[in-house]
Image 1 (cartoon, rainbow, N blue to C red):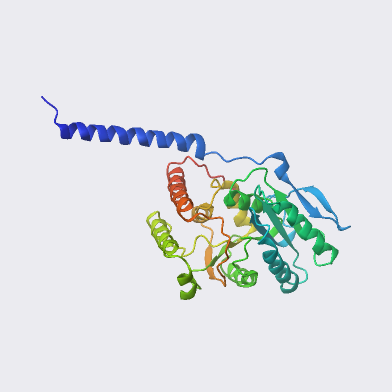
Image 2: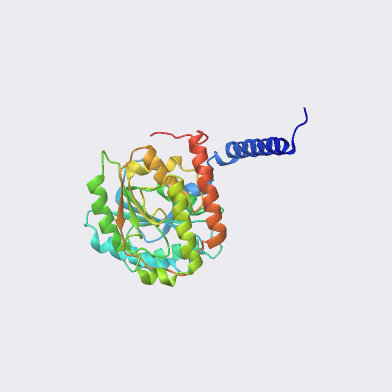
Length: 326
């Protein structure tokens, strides 16, 4: 019996799809399911000593008892020109708005910068300590040997924090640090058995002026990405990408040792893990502003984020990424 051309095409398409799926599965297993371990040098940081000098010390881990009330993790890649404004804002709030017995620390994670961000951070902290604006242990500076991506820098900082509460905040200062007050208030309302996450949300506060100032292509891409997130099952959070998220120490300990994503889409993995572990999450409106100098490439990074999200979903669905419960 002769095989029709239509049947041949159907068989060929099925065979190609099977080969592509098999190849994709192998790539997922061999590459994306592995977590990169830290280099030995990345386990240390520079910290201001009691005599006002920087000493090299071994970083703490989340499994250690909390030593301060709040840790602030700041991922920084080539942020020499924008970092000081954010640091000034953070230090002012932490110094004057927290209770006197609520100790804090700022951990700057230099993500393999090429503009001397690491050296600038050390010099900035030294200058502030000499003017008595910073105390022993309040600023820690750590550096990754190679640029790994925002997700890796945040994860590294979170895992090595000393705080009872830990927040990561973008280095550009787009989110006003005074927003922390509301995040702390709201996380305590939903915290259960030491577990809770409060995430800043720009979707509640984005004015029409800000939206109009963005390019049409950017607004279009953001709309498409939000629809894609909804399609992929991320439906309970309006603003997944805001760089202002607060965690209890126990929540951070459950989530960040399980992180795999190293680039921009890491926020989604955080929320997926929170859902898996049944950690309460609250979205809190924050004051923010657009800041120029973003490292995000609108087209290429948006495509990369879409691919990373698909890879992440498949890895969790098929069990390639193992979850360790603490």
